[in-house]
Amino acid sequence: MSDAPRTSPWDGFEHRRRTAPGPRPAEVGAWLVTDADLPDLDAGWADEPLHVRVDRGAGDVSPALAWAARGPATPRWLGLALRDEIDTDVNVRRVVAALDDARAQGVAPDDPDELSLVLTLPSYPGPAGAGLPAALLRGLDEIAAAEAVLAVPCDTDPRFVADLVEAALDREVAMVAARVDGPTSRQHAVGWRNLLAGVRASLDGEPAEPVLVDPAAAEVDDDTVRRTRRWLRAAVVG
Image 1 (cartoon, rainbow, N blue to C red):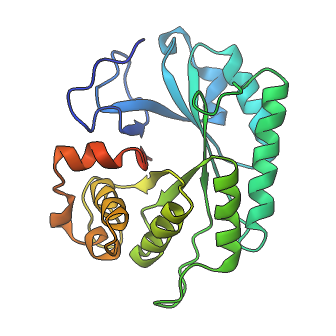
Image 2 (cartoon, helix red, strand yellow):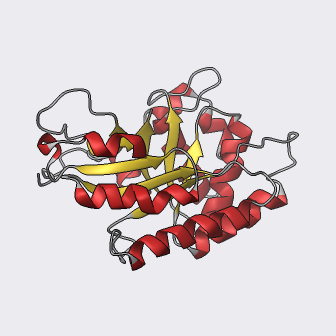
């Protein structure tokens, strides 16, 4: 199924679960599935773009992509959460090596534009003003070197989210909003529109944290969305 022309700057922004058959809504850029879901996809998924979330570790990357290659749908995003707060850089390299192995097996495209690797760093908010720990910064360096995408968890401390945004942009790393509950921030959760506003603020040299927690900041204009989507590419809902 080909993508319809965009009429809104938010078109194609959401990655979420498919709850019913039928045409893909304009706002959905990919269907979110786990690696365990892949064997069950039938012909009704033909040519649909997928965001495949691997729920265990790097060793499951090649098997997941092998299943996907035999199926009717097309993986466009491959997501995995890293859990080791100490050797984060080593774990990023391990996932990248697993993806390279899948490419060598012919079950993943060589072009990163055809399959984006999306990695979530461990959540580790420290004291106010302390910034990100060195281990996470080393992991982010490896994400940048691999030209991967950073998944920013929106269900954690906004200070941590702001630090991630600023560190990612310093390294020219694109992002997606992950573990989101909705478009607008509320208590203990950053909305994806607020995250986009925070990314824009950081790009413009302003602090990100104030707009991450202000529901009114979610009202971003279309031009701001278009100019920022290069750096915040999607919201992974679920």
